[in-house]
Image 1 (cartoon, rainbow, N blue to C red):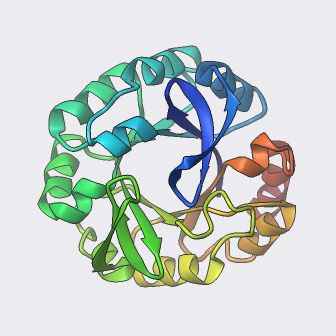
Image 2 (image 1 turned 180 degrees about the vertical axis):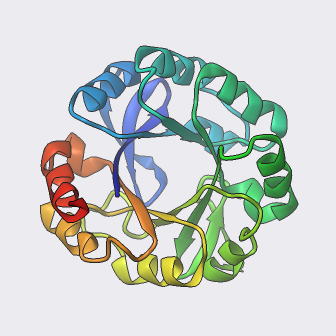
Length: 245
């Protein structure tokens, strides 16, 4: 199970939001590249980047920063999402050095787009499923669709999707723990590895999810808890390394 630090980029800064609310921003660093280097040095196995400006506007804004991050830590896989709504944008990100592209809103609006991307970029496509009360959110979490999380996710089986990032919006940035039950439910019902996201607050959250290491959960994204030093990458990795023996 991979430990994946989150770097959310807004207005050129490394920030964290609460429940996806753009008005509830905490700036943790003014240089996302430096943060990426820090997490890499501390043992990150992958980085989760989100172009928040792009997610809100529907088109990429921070490609230059993402490119600089990829160049600064070439040996660490990067997954990037936020405002990727066409093949050209996905290709640009991959050309900058990103290892994986995360598609959220467009995946809900046009599942065939995911099939097309998987055919063109095999092994590179991750679907981001963000939910509130079991329903999928889109457009930078501004809109709630009528789509059920499990039903939507099952549509992507057989497409070649590498993983699904599942985020519980009500937990995200709130430091109140993962929605483990919802994450496990998705992992058990969908034949695609799930990356858990949203709400990790302390080492106990890692202990809880480690009890389900063979359940189809392939990684866990950690944001605010890392920035506020409530948890370290090293101690989280130690828990999983013991289980992998």
